[in-house]
Amino acid sequence: PRVANPGCYPAGAIALSRPLVDAGLIPPDHPLTINAVSGYSGGGRTMIEAYETGTGPSFELYALGLDHKHIPELMRYAKLDRRPLFVPSVGNFRQGMLVSVPLHLEMLPGRPASSDLEKALKGHYRDQPTVRVIAEPLSTLTKLEAEAPSATDTMELFVFGQDEHGHVVLVARLDNLGKGAAGAAVQNITLMLGLDETKVAQTDSGQ
Image (cartoon, rainbow, N blue to C red; front, side):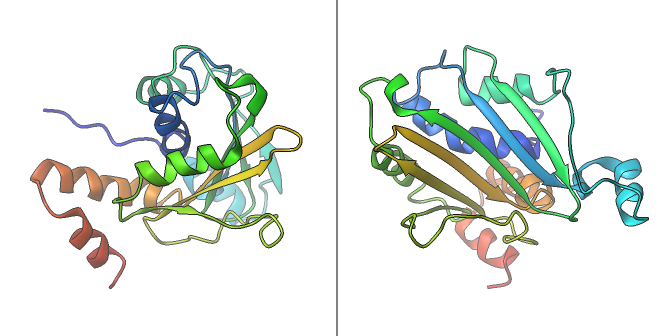
């Protein structure tokens, strides 16, 4: 059988949304907006050369034709019936990625609290060695750097909630070359060969 490696953007977006769709917290036809910023190393030879020779911009939005090639795979594997609005961007740093999904809690079934979304993600990824749901109070964590998990195949998921306003922002942080490419390929091979993913993850991280 043929196995497709996921794109780095869909890897983060699917990791955030699929468990919540499965749990009934996000309807498949919900109008999702997905924003993402990546290091320039995921943009191909021309983009890499532009940034490494100092001619690339500090920051830019792209794919503003709103027809990004990864949208079909994102919809399929997140089980979305409605096409999401996806806006990617690239920054002047080599590798790292943030994928964010803002939500209005009042528009979700049953008006869940932000803690309900976090609980669903934690339950889904409880036994996953390369995905961590980070629980941090907003008083201690109010900003994220895209470059933090560089050179690993670990993905970090965050739920930033303000229940008083009914707002939540889901965030996936990953290395676009690690978890978004090479690490995902290793995981695919592990699954195909029936290997112990925990041991492979420890070996890959140098433990």
